[in-house]
Length: 613
Image (cartoon, rainbow, N blue to C red; front, side, top):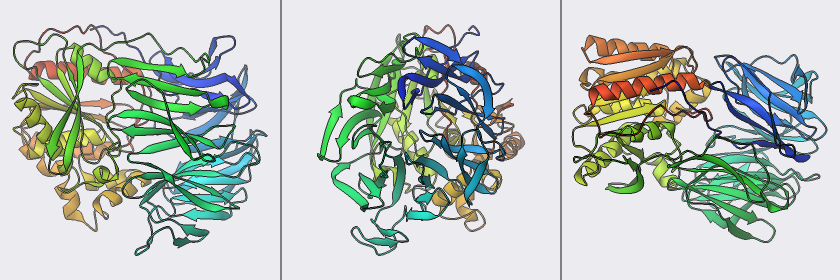
């Protein structure tokens, strides 16, 4: 293998509201994710940032100023800005305490609202671009700024989707205008749960999608989970909350306003793939926006009905497309993954488990060794989308199984809430069921399977190896949760809140539940060789609890290797990703039977957005 690798664009460019030919995007620069501008008229690229740890958060406002968040290895930092054409870089929010970015919004006249997270909670500041800011809101926990009205008078702030105040609308002075719950009051039926700002419909979760960008409008867009599906909602100060029951969806959606009409672009995740819909609220119509079969990683509407979207499938690296032919930034050469890529549905006690299966191009006489790539989250899913690790493994002769276990998104609310065997154990049960199905159908070798996961996926690797030790022959766990109680006490406020929702309480209140789901409890039972990768600056899956797990493996004489990265949980440096990929491929080569000859000449890498547990 050589040291060559590529980093693919995995997000859409942000478009200047006043000039759609001016865009800002993130892409590879020497193996790091950095910010670039794209002038579609001149077809010219300019690099804006060049930082040691990479840059991922960026924006462009109506006056053509490019924004980016410069952070250190702990994800803490400040916003900066510079004109699209260049010039001095200036502090965007001078005097504001360093923090972690939780949203930025800029109006056409340069009014700025931003949210920053700190150890004590989240603050919202408002001011003028490049001038002193005024703090208007501060609350404990992890909040996110989700938009500002065109005139800058109202600001939307979101908490967790099931929080008692999931969405809050503030005035620019910090007064609460509206508070909507993500969890309905007990015993409430129909559409009338009385809240501090009027009626709120019964439901379990609520997501904020931002204000309409049309001048003179104060209309907020929301997505509500009604336990059996999802609906769109809108709110205005004059009309209050409106639920659009005429337009239901059976799986998860996100939505954005078209800039010039009262229409929405809805992106639906459904069974590992994506659909785009144009929904017109005035005419009450829903029309499918044609896209190729696969996954739309991001989509954004423009004026006159045009849509920019980022498309991919398992066999093809992401490509940027525009329905009106607008010139978008170049995003690398066409990459085709070898092999055969298909779907498998496995019956289980709770329904059918969906697996994306990739088989090597030149299989041998016997079924190939297999690697189960386990997605993080758990509120996420594996997509029919390009994955550099899949590319490297299939080209090396391995079969790859990506299982959308219970808890995954894209299969409806019930599937996401289904945890009958407990946290972690339900997902391990699904992995084992799919493994048995693949072996029975002759797709993979019976005794040559490895597990590989990152974050929450890495947690499942450790739990599966400890609770079903004879089923797997190797494991790779990158930045895992290894001890739930210890991770809870040293992690971020947002992840502590997630733990409470998963387990129903804290480790002090429910120690048995945390211990039952912790890989540390089962470390001595592991028999398969294990590679554990930790990050010394990780605040989501902290290094201390990983070291405790490694010590338990050593005490039990479990064969294992450790690799440490000098990064945080969400790194933007492609070189670190490739280092892990190369080490992992060597680890598998030495512990699984040699697969049939493949075509791999080098590892493939891609950078995406930050991942949750």
